[in-house]
Amino acid sequence: PADGAGAPSVQGPSLQGPGTELLVCLFCPESVSLQQKDVLLKHLLLEHKLVIADVKLIADLSKYMLYWKGRFLEQPVTDFCSVIKTNSTGPVEKQEDYFLLCDVLPEDRILRERLQQKRLEEVLEQQQVERDDGSFHRLCMFCSEEFAGNRSSLLNHMAREHSFSIGLPDNIVYCNQFLDTLQRKLDNLQCLYCEKTFRDKTTLKDHMRKKAHRRINASNHEYDRFYVINYLELGKTWEEVQSEDDRELADDEDDDWSDWQAHPVSAVCLFCEHQSETMEQIYTHMKVHDNAYIKLLRPPLPDLRFYQQVKLVNFIRRQIHQSRCYGCQEKFDSRDAVLRHIAAEGHMMKLPDVSTWNQPQYYFPTYENDALLCTLSDSDEEESDETNHGEDVPVIAEDISNLRALKQSSVLNQLLKNRGSCS
Image 1 (cartoon, rainbow, N blue to C red):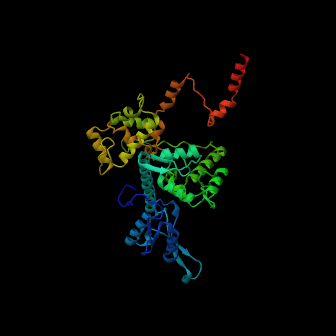
Image 2: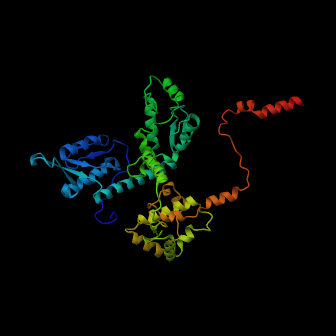
Image 3: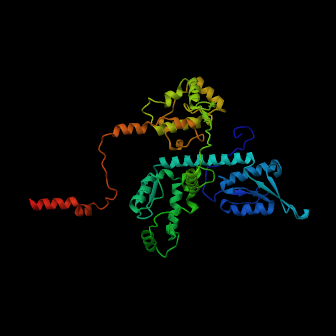
């Protein structure tokens, strides 16, 4: 249904910071900033008797509101919303009708999913821009050392020299805004972890050093939007995803698997929409594509490592899903049109430059539970085992920060002294 006629269309500008967009009322000219969304939700409840379910699961509330404002102008609200009658057993004059807008309605569900997908695509594009950006320029928050070039140089410096880590650079998005937020807190003499305010900078620095508070508060959801993981699942933060995984592991220990029945695998062809219940059947089908899959990804191609195969599969899937030829990047009106083009032009085996598809954004599967990814050849470990077998691997201690003290107090140094005195 999401690809058919009548499906909600999501248009609008790129992701902006909080508070920069307006939320409009669905029934009247009232509007507020995004930061005042509770004011508008209260207005909808009291003035228009409408409740929006699971607001926190909506990826882009302003576009969501604009969409439904337009739909309510076309059709009455009762065509979309569940009606809840209050005081249903009381007198008729005291009964009121309230309206619930939720994702039980297929149109609402599709809209929420599209907003989530669009937000994720924007975030991944922004992350890639920041990864490649060489114009980054900023001072360290703790020692005022100047850094220019790539953001990773500053983030790694703060982690290494000041024991202050906000995570791996590749896991962060909107990095400048993130650092601005942290800098404002320090300028206001506020601890980044416990968020207490101190009388001067010296006291604040001593507090953060002695209390090991050189880290951010994970419970502060102001930081959620700066981490890519918070955009991956609809309306869930990394803590919620992690707690769900932990509960699943705990539940698995007590599960009784005696009545478990395997469900058939739904494998989708890499080049068209054909589906099969087993991987053997899908491989047989893909032979009609001139064995292109075998030539592109299957052994004995030693140059394509496992994660490169993953990214290539996800790249091809996304291009075809977006009706674009993965070989020449030409855009078409439909998926059938692009498949006809690929076959007619012989682009089945044509791949763009490696830099086009070998991107972090293609670590994420285009299709959920893509069975094709589970069958890729994991040759990295086999090659590394063969290469490193029999080699001596040096073991280096983690803490070698004070080499001078280590040399003076080491057992080896004492043995050398004793040997010199004996001779």
